[in-house]
Image 1 (cartoon, rainbow, N blue to C red):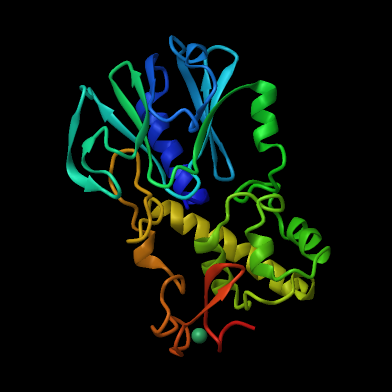
Image 2: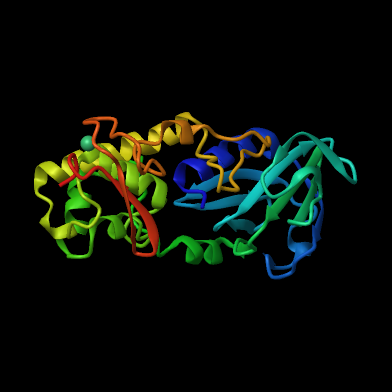
Length: 283
Ligand SMILES: [Zn+2]
């Protein structure tokens, strides 16, 4: 699933590509994915693109926004001057080289090109919402990393209230927004904390380390344009993959040597998700 760095990469790319442009048409091929009235969107100009956690918000000139959640396999691909069908220079996961594909569910025709929403598993959504409705969609999200509200003190408060395993707390969108399985695994490795450790047992030094680690792995994710591992659908709106997968610390590295101590990285299934750690470095 696209996490903060992936969605932020999508946001920055779309910001360059489509802000200031007018939406000329919206073709909805799968009504459950596009929740709202296309009439509220057609003719509107795209004013700016924001993000909260894993949620993308495309702000329109009227009082409506497009609120987008990519969930497991959602993708947005921008094709400048896109005609009825488009042949891509290189294949995209779960699409191939032709757009629209079987996995294409919404097509926005915008001045100067087309924006394709593809989603193999179809858990993602695009909702048309006014200002209040937009706030409702993101209102339950917890603290946003990489902002000034995200402090060690804030993390301390969150962790002190629960004995749930630290990895599950990091991935709880109501506590902290944007971190999913990839960056939770890597941040805990970076901080030397075992994923199963009860959150309220972290001392101040550990919280500080984890705070720094979360900022570090998310910044790395952004620097490399997100993670496009072989089992993931994520690509940038340009159709190019990210490269954070080449820099995974422990995620999907079971059986390999720990980058710090050389011991073999372990994988367990925990909270229904693959969980990776070094049994020597993480306590
Ligand atoms: Zn180690």
